[in-house]
Image (cartoon, rainbow, N blue to C red; front, side, top):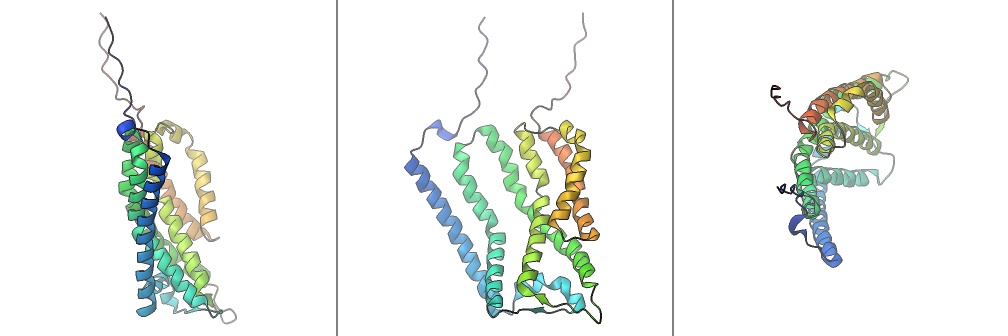
Length: 262
């Protein structure tokens, strides 16, 4: 009796070798679209920032409003280049889904079917999670962290915050919080590809806690409040990731009913 052959994994789309020139043409097309979209967003955001009394910078400096601390500059060109940086950050933030979709359209034909299934949830939820992490940092962390540092103000020490340095620090913190909220999607991809399992995550929980606090110390200013506010969500996301890995892992099998022995 001939046993049926096990199905082979579905290969890349059409499974036809593509000439190098076609790859380069497709890559150039995706890059042109991405750069055009980012540049268009940059022009619009920068123009709005310069023409309408800095609406984006006003959002960034809102954690300072309670103390009524102005942003100053000590170099002639600093405001101009700060507005350019704001326009670029804003454009990258708003156009990231378009750039990500162009990247996906370029690489997806070369992926196997199971690899596509592993990556599509990342495409759907990575941007909302990143935005959620940034909003958590903006509303829950920055007010406490900045208030801590500005608490050293007294009759002898008055704050004078440079707009370029303040923007750089704020963007760095918001990006860090957005990045840590991507942990569940990263664990999902690794689990779907069989590179990590829920049991391994459980066994290494104690090591992960140490890594969490090290990351919080690196990514945040050196104060306990801000570090704790970053480490707390990371710990919760790690626990959620264990459950996600259990659901997503291809090695997880439901227990089968064993037939009684005769």
